[in-house]
Image (cartoon, rainbow, N blue to C red):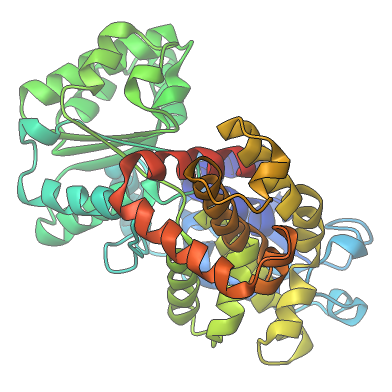
Length: 463
C-alpha cells in the first residue's frame, strides 16, 4: 500500500517522537490520483501542512511512480478512525465533527516534478533544512562534536577526521550535527554531491538495486560523492551483502579523500557484531562522543526551539520541563510540543499550571522511577559504601564526595528543592546542598575521573 511505503520513508526522515505523535495516527486512502490523509482536528491538519506536507507529496509521487500527484489533508469524523478520545491530545467532539476544506499543496508542472524527484534521488534523503549549526544548541555535552563538525567543513576529506564517527545514545543531536555539515556544504557549494541516509535505507536501496539489475548505477551514485552521511551504522549488523558493498563504497570514498560522517549508539570498538575490517576503518579518522545534555543546555534547547516556533516560553517553565525530561533532545521536543498543543487548545498562555497539566504522565512516571531514595541507593552501590554512611554525618572524603555527587544528581534529576534534598540526606541545611551542587559542577570540569563517575551514574539512573 502506498501510505505504508510512505510511512517507512517518513520514519527514516523524522525524529521518533514527531513520527509517533503527528504522522503515525493519520489515516489514508487513495482515489483517482489523490492521496487523502485524515487527521483528528484542524490544528493537526495545519501542523502537517506547515511542516511535512511537501515532503509527503514528493514521497507519494515518487513511490507511486507518478500515479499520485496530489495529497489532501482533511479532518476526519469517522468514529474510531483515528484515535480514541483519551488519546487525542488537543481535540473536542465539535472539532472532530467539523470537516474543513481540503488543504492542498501547489504541485509543480510535470517537468518540475520530475526535476524534484531527480533532486531527491540525487541526495538520496532530503536534508532537514532546520538541521543547521545556527539552530544547534551547544553545551558541555556536545561542544567538541559541534566544533569538530565545523572544522570538517574547512578541511573536507582531511585524514585526521575522515571518517568522522559521532557516537552516543539516541536523541542527542548526532543527526542534527551531521546534516548541519551537509546543509552548510550545499550552501557554500550548491553543486556539491551530498548523500544522507540511514544504514537501514542503504540496505533497502542496495537490495532494490539488485532486484532491478541496477547495481552498477547504485555503486556509481554512492562512490561519486563529496560527502556521505550515514546514520545508525550499527544497524548494518547481519546484512552481509550490504556490509560488503558498504565496505567497498567506504574504501572508494576514502581513497578519493571524500568526507564520510557516520553515527552510532556506541563507540566503534564496541561494534563487535560488524566486520572487524570495517570497524578498524571507522577508527582511522576521529571518533567523538555526544553525551546527554546537562540541565543548562536542556533549558537553552527548549528556549531556542520555542523561539524558532514563535512560542513564548517563560524561563521558569523551561526550567521545570528541563528538570523533568532528562534523557534526550527528542523527548524535550516532544514535551514542548505537548505543552504548546495544550496551551493552544485551552487558549491560554504557557505557565507552570499548563506545563504541569501537559506533563502529568511524565511526572507520574518519574515519581515512580527516579527519586532521591533511588539515587541514594544507586550511588551507594556504585561506590560500595553503606547507605547509612552516605546519608549520615561522617565527613571523611570516602563518604563526603559520593554524598555531594548524590545531592547533585538529585537536584538535576528530581527537581526537588534544596531543602527537600537536604531533609533526605539526614536533615541537612539547604545551603549544604547548594554547596554540594556547586562543588559537583566544578569537579566535573576539573576532575576527569569524577566526571566519568557522574556520567556513569547518570546513565544508570536514566536507563
